[in-house]
Image (cartoon, rainbow, N blue to C red; front, side, top):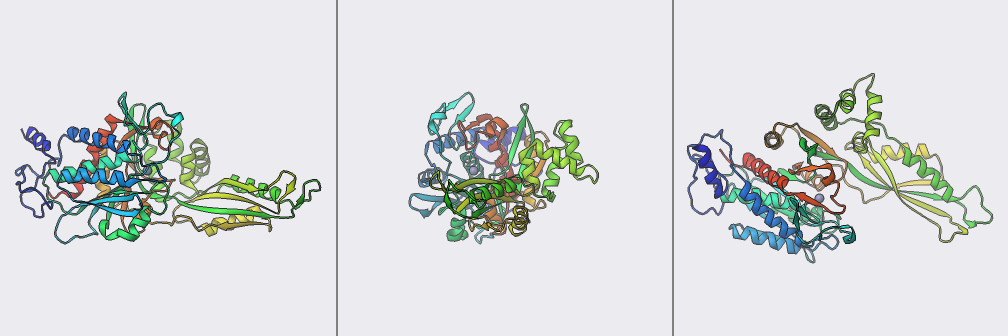
Length: 490
Ligand SMILES: [Zn+2]
């Protein structure tokens, strides 16, 4: 009976359970909370499958709006989202940041006076990376549904999050729930290029529009192996990207009379040393917990090394084995250094007087570029080779805490959604907008609540990106439950 009742309430939105609390969602249409009498321990939301189908339609339309960055043109997507929210009676605001580029923000209020420290921000980006159309089997901007997948650029990254966030947000409004904190929906611009319209710029210009103490962003993953969810990774920290230039100088001249002072040769030697350098291993507390959790789900030939990664006798050997086994694990354990660009010479018969390389470094949070450059200088050991730190690097942000109520809710609800699988904190090797949020004291968590096989995960930023629709429905369900559990007063 209760169950049937809950499901029928859900048809109109989220079931709410509060008969005694205050602060209904602003703008609610004068309907009394329907589920008085259901004990607070009951689940907050029922069947979300109808909502997921709606969210799927929004997502198809979002994929059809080409927001390839550059130039982005996110304003068209922002207007589409504002239209969806308007139909729900929610006022959305476009935040203009550059010509043709606007973010969109909307808020459900818990009280007349906002308390930003408590607020929950649901953030996702609307821009996508470019495509090589000749490699795609379907139109990347056609919103094609085939074989249980939605094909298209952004179908996973990150429009699936935009749509799932929108669903969770709208569910609160439809449910006329009593919120214990403001919930803010934000769809952003320029995440992929991190340029003039990025979240950093939005924060500088509009922070008061979406200031929050907590956030859910992309950056995590629900890992599927052999057809089953293996674990959920929640991103709580990320590596810091720093670029270096390596410049070798020497004696230029005619290539017919070379000397030992050729900068191309000096540079090549330096790049060889830098590129092969293995920075020392440092296991952060997050990575330690990640590997520990992983040891419970990996096959034994991997798990046996994960279990001894810290052991005084076998630790070093285990770290080597695991580094060789998986480049991502290697990158989670140490600073990495990747030479990426080379530049020298104008003619094949002229020795240049300068040769230059560009190097991308990913630092573990807490490690400094000064220390690493010092080590590299010693290694290169050539006074005619100069390493310089470029100013376009990321800033180190504090980790998000694993002790917050939001982290606890994400952990509980994710485990529940996927049959008790482990939920592990995660250090991402790539950068996300969460660093910008963490720099503003936001406890930001990276979650992509959609179960994905490695094969589909690998299509993100590649050819034939496609989203499994059954997985998307699970993602909508999880996101809705996390947001309700965290924000609805019971
Ligand atoms: Zn993304």
